[in-house]
Structure formats: structure tokens, C-alpha cells
Length: 620
Image (cartoon, rainbow, N blue to C red; front, side, top):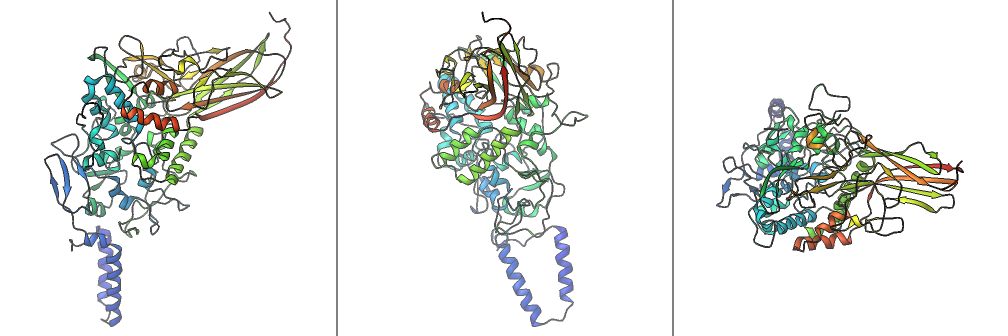
């Protein structure tokens, strides 16, 4: 039997008062029976506490730590610093108290739906960051293209995608990330992605500074689990998993997310040597910091809010503020000494990545994912909601006729806290405009696409820009031909200024016309790092949106115009560039990609009707 249960002082005082009052009553058979039954019920409810001794940590020669009680803590590993040896656990250990239970009210919203952290996190891209077949394919392609940089690539990429197994050892020749495929504790920890004990152990050191970017977060060495609550109840977590809940308001700061969502790399030249230049590969945090949503600078604006407010919301799906117990006991019953608390956040961690989420759902067994289809459907529903309500808006402006030319302006407003699209440079959004006459016939279409998600001209032919090695689509202010499309994207350039789709070779941008967040300014501290490229001369491409003007010659008649903003996580061009590399991981991903539904996500739609009258001057 383990050590006596040590409870918080308030709970102890309550039990002591109850005991003293009972002891003062006459000693009867009823009291004895009542005491036996009560003791039995308490033991049953907390049997794991009494029966499970605290494990003793032992460190092996490989740095992997084990417990003398495998049921208590199954897997712990030392991370970056050999001196501090911060320790991690698989999410399954956290799930014992932080997943939903039918016998507990903890972690449920007012409609009795689960808001338990592990339940919602397990289908996120963060939970599956190291299982993500696209990520593995890209890493293998980068190594194939620049084999001299294999060790650097693996170390850089696993800092954030497999942080509990980092730093990476160099894989055997011809394979990438081999160690993540092995059957051992380290591989299993790595497969757990960005798990609970990563983010909640990050210390606030260097927050918001360049020293913390590109995966250079620091894990505290005292086994502290940070959360936003003062005076947390420490006994259960200390007893079960040897962590100490600790108040840490930094867990709610955007700078926490910035440690992995700001990626700055040192480019490699044509000879495989590091250049002096640095490339801002992903900068959503810097983009947010240069927007009206920045809540770090004072005074805070009326629109200021953190990354967490959108991606880890403190409300249920209906918008009600959450107020619930933070955990239940490992037996699945509520801790009676825990009261509902605020804030409590839903760890949905969704963005716009519906495409990869569907691939994970459809291939869960092959990818080693245990989350069920129902859980993935819940995530997909939240992704759809975010894309349609928290990204961008489209509006067809006032249509007017000049001679035989019909001028139709389309305004796009960015309503999210960073560029749209943002982060990984495979993403793109584009305008799809369709003009339909009163007979229901399409008379003009720009931005059309086929069943494979490829951009096509009005006659259905695939645009040359969709193929590997094809031309780059320029940023447009005016469109008058069906094969002209306004695509918001990034195209990287190598050290010689040529287009490249290799992250290692990227030195600058040929094109970055992604929609800027509202409030963005070039003269701000993060202006240079987040500035657009290839939009010179477009005076209405500003912080908060853009306007594209269509000029079309139409015969007299009545028409209907449809303008929609579409979004792809992996552009067709980006996929085709990747598929040139015949590595095992690329071949595996291509199989999943080819089988997937590739129709782009619809962000917003605007429709209007108009009439074209006879021009006063004859057609030329």
C-alpha cells in the first residue's frame, strides 16, 4: 500500500471538523457500520491513489528515463538540455484525468458536451505533427535535394514536429527520420507530436524575442506544469505523474505560440553552403504583432486579442463562456475538492487545415492514429466554421459600364490576426469570378478549377502555372481575360533569384501577396520581416485587404455575378514540385494525396445581379 493520501489544507480542515463531530457522538453499531461503508466508498473512488506507489525515476545510458511502476508513468524522456533533463509524458497519461468521463461533470460545457483537453487536442495537426505524412514527405525531399544538410534538416524540423524525441539523431542513409519509426520509448514519445507536457512546461524565458523562435523554447527543469490559475490544487498531479501545477500566465500569451510558429532559417546556396542571409519562412506571430490584434503593446486596442483567443477559445461552440472543473480522478469520478474554474479553454487548436485533417481521418489506421472518425468530424466542423467566419470576406462593389466595358470591382477583407493565407508556404487563396447570363450560361470565368483542384482556363485547360517548373502567376490589379487569376500566395527564390520550392534553398520571396492583417504598417518593427513582394503599383493592396477590378466586354442583357474566395492548404503547383522526388515518404504521401478529395475550401461568397445596356458608341 502506498503513502497516506495527502489532501489540500482546506479539504483536510473540512474532514477534521467532520471527524471531531462524529467522535463526540455516542459510539454505536450504526456509527461503526457507517464508518466502514464510508471508508469503502472513499477507497473505491480513490483506489488508484492508495494502491499505486509513486514511481522512481531511473536514467538509462540512452537518456531515456523509465519508472519502476509502468502503470504510473509509462514513458519519460530527456529533451534538449542534458543538464536540466526536462521530462515528458505521453498524452495517454494526461488523459487519465483530462479526458471526458461519463461518471464526471468535469470538463463539460452547459450542454454536457466534452471540452476535455485531450479529447479535443487528439485530432489536431499539433497532436499529429510527427505522423503528418506531408511533413515527412517534405523532410525527405529536402534531404534528398541537399543531402549534406541532413543532420541540420532533421534537427531543425523535429524541434517542433517531434519535440519529445528531439534532438534528432541522423537517420541512416537514404531514409529520413528513421528513429521515429522504431519500436521504443523515444519513438513513441516522438509520435505523440506536440503533446500536453511540451506546451505546458515551456518557460517564459526570451518570449517574443528572436532567441525563442524556430523551436528554441525552453522547458523548465522543475517539472512544473503551467496554467492560468492562481493557487492550483497540486496533490493529484504530483501524486499521479510527479508534476506540479503552477500558475503561469505566460501560457496565455501569443509569444508561447511564436516559439514554433515563427520559423527563420539560414539559406543554403547552390553549392550546399550556408549563406549569410536569413529567410523568414513562417511569420504568423510577427504578422499578428504588426496588426490591430496585438495585445502585447500598451495601450491595448479594442480589437486586441491573443492567438489563443481564436485557436484555443474559452467559449463553447455556441459562444458561452466555459466554467468547469479542470480534471476528474483517474477512476473517472469528480474530485469533490475541485470547484469549477475560469478560464477554461477548448484545446481545439484548429486552423484552416481541413485537407490534411481529412487525410488523417481517412487513413488513421495506416498512420497509427487512434482518434475516431466522430472526433475528426468534430474538428472538421470547427475548421469549416473558422474558415467561413474568421478568415476573410468578399464583396462585389458597385458595377458600372464604360462604353462596351463592364467594370466589376471585388473587395477582399482580411479579418484574421495575421496574413491570409499564413505560415507554411504551400498555401494559397484565389478569387473565382463567374458571370452567368439570363439563360444560365457561363459567359466569363476566372479562377475556375477541376476535380483535382487545379486552376483551369474557361475552356477547361489546366494553367501552365500548375505544373512543376511552370511560370509564376503575377499579382494583378485588373483582370480582363479568363486565364488571368488573382492568386494570393508565396513563391520563394533561391540565392540566385530563381523560383524554388525548397525551404532549405529559399533566400527571399519572388512573390508574397498574401492579404495583410488589418493595421499592418511597413514602418513598424516587424514591417520589413512581413512586407509583401510583387505588389508594386497596387495602391489598394493595404493592411486589411485588397481590391481586384474585372473589366469585361459583355453584350446587352441581364447577368448574375458570383465571386468567391477559395483556399488550398497544398497548392497543386507545390504538390507537383514535391512529387518530383521519389523518396519512400513522398511516394507514400502521393498515394494518400491522389486518393483525397481536393476541392478547395470556400472562404466566402458574394453574389449580385446587373444589367448591361447598349453602348452609345459602336463596338470597334
